[in-house]
Length: 591
Figure 1 (cartoon, rainbow, N blue to C red):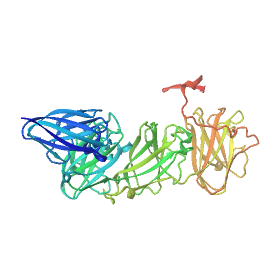
Figure 2: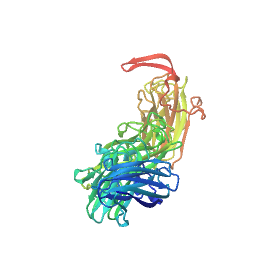
Figure 3: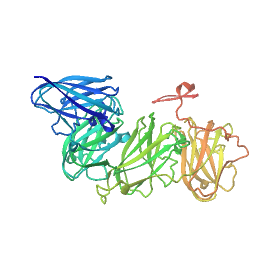
Figure 4: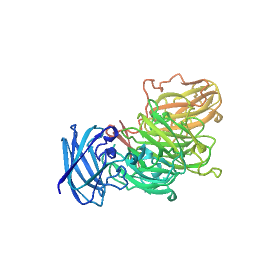
């Protein structure tokens, strides 16, 4: 039988310049349907007018007569290699039992130009272009797995934290859903779940079996796909995810169907969040550093008892160790973190996110969240997110929104702060009040307040080499106290914690004059200290100064005392062994 030649002209233009299978846009290239009455060997030649790397694919059609959306290993018959030539060609054997699809393309998307295709075979070859009325309708949604939303597959409880997309149908339709990710090479396996949506606005909060409709395979490649039948007038939630937790990337969800569809992102109904930053002077580090009080703080107002999760997410290309404290509040900035008030403390991790779950009671006084980096002076943006996991209030329903349960707002009530640095030196190291003859031979500072106020006093040392504490004495004048006052004048005393960087106390003081006595527990101990006074009343007049004819215990202002927290071992020089216990040997030294 004599050979016949068929020729078809076409072009790659705009969206139809889709590139090769490495790109999710390959399916928008021109497509031709081929069929034979008997088994035939067909030589196909693709010729271009430009100078691109060109090639083509031959696959088995799905029989729908519509644009081919998926080319799998089982349906891909052959391919012509991509070469920078005017023409590429290939011979392929076609069976009469199948309809085939031919997809000519350039290697890269966006390469526009005209082309022609020649077919050489004996006998009849049917060639049909894609009918315009057989084009799929399609919608696209874009998202990102990042931080908390990189929740992994259903093997993890965090799966429900992944982005979700609402897909609405008006008519019953066949649909093909594609999940594409090309931003990251050697990426984790990915796939998606199709669930029944319960809301047109908010994400599902639980992955229940009764919601399940279908799922794709998890594919370690640029895209995962699934074809299924969708019911009329229905709402579906598409939940794309990676197989493992914590794998971050941008992605695209594309849905092709016979009928019109709508897709959009679903919001998280059960959480509230605030974007903030550790900025200049507001990156205080953890409580190992006296500067922790400078970190941003947030009021968490609980209107109902609930089980919640608190997530701290850092926005930094280089991950730092982060964590947070959740404590009972007093209606203003927290400057003393009392152990009995601490509700929960996260671990510090060098991760994108840190999350802790807890149950909080309804409270008229807001709780306080203090996010921080482990070390101070690390500046970056961060996000605090509080999610309602379960409302414990019988008056609330399972659909109660987060804002009906809790509120998260920046702490707007900051204390006034006064600070002095000093030394325990030869004439000013009299020990604690147990040393009745010498305890007043310590550095003393006067505090004069014009109105009643809550006061916090914090005494800090660089390293926990001394056991330290502070006393507050009532006084009639701004002068040094040299004789033991009556016990009624002692209005406040801190504890003397062992092995601590600081001692603190908080109390309500009426307007008046007070003398603050800074002590080591034992007499004769030397060292540097910093005394800080916080006042809640920001409208009153406040005076804070050293007292006495000799104030040589005061450090000059240009010598800033800084709590270093941790010291590099290479900088440490050990001198004297001063003790030993079950935990090890204690030395005195310098750095």
